[in-house]
Image 1 (tube, rainbow, N blue to C red):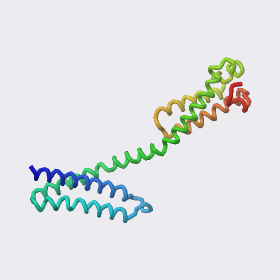
Image 2 (cartoon, one colour):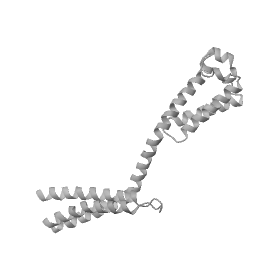
Image 3 (spheres, helix red, strand yellow):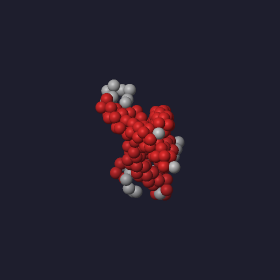
Image 4 (cartoon, rainbow, N blue to C red):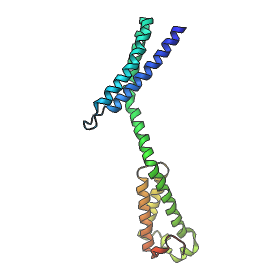
Length: 193
């Protein structure tokens, strides 16, 4: 029983050490010669070996078969980590990109809300609808472009998407162009007349 627990413990240590080492080496060894740095790769291999070799040798002293089983387990863990590392690195890259894009997406959402509020005045306020009927007349090219830009921004809003912030900017430009075409003075676009 005690031997099985030791084998399980050293097996877990070995699998974790080999998997982490393979992932670290894959991350630090890039095909781009400008980014390739041999020092991190050396230290990744050194530290992984400093854990993996004792994890194989210590149980081998108690039982040579345990060492053979652990060597096979370590080899399997290395192959699995090597084959799975592109997916893991791609997932990490996506997460990193999402963290970088989140402030941009949040700012675009706030701008989108402000633009929708500005647009809704022309749609919901009867006085604005009477004073500026061109803002709701989709037969006019500027208003039609505004509706298309509004729809595009709304469709991209649901999930963080790289095209959302530019779509919101296009929506803002289309709204400003439609207001100019409708003859709305620039000073009153921020408030109701």
